[in-house]
Image 1 (spheres, rainbow, N blue to C red):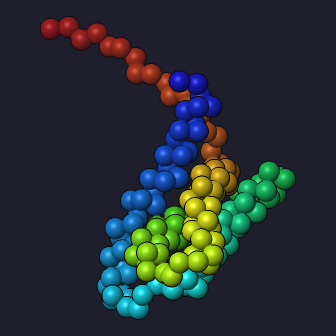
Image 2 (image 1 turned 90 degrees about the horizontal axis):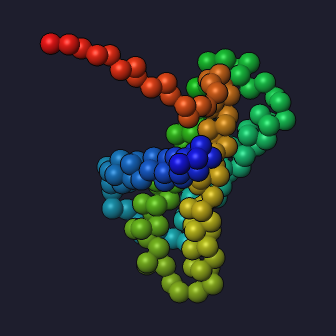
Length: 161
């Protein structure tokens, strides 16, 4: 498998696996702190998509800053912690979006508003790998890492009886 293809598969897998692993915790948290509560409305779901979009734009902006040469690593541990919290927020917001849509979208009345909401939700799902790629680029820079696929192999040691 070529390095580029491997990175792409790894990125897409991570982009969807991390929020998927968070879904049970988000669902449990919503159950514990919000109870069964009121049914989801189109406005509340639209705000959830907008919150995800704002964090996504923050990651794209951070990536653009890194690409333009802004020394984000000079922020030290504070910047590192802030970017890691931002990465967690991106994934928690997507997991929350998945939980909320699963619970409430079916109860919304038919119409153009519902269709637009579904397209926004689908857009959030489709751009998640791009957001993850931007986050990885910034996080690698913050941590001072260069990503290499090549891992040195273990040397064979002959052990006799």
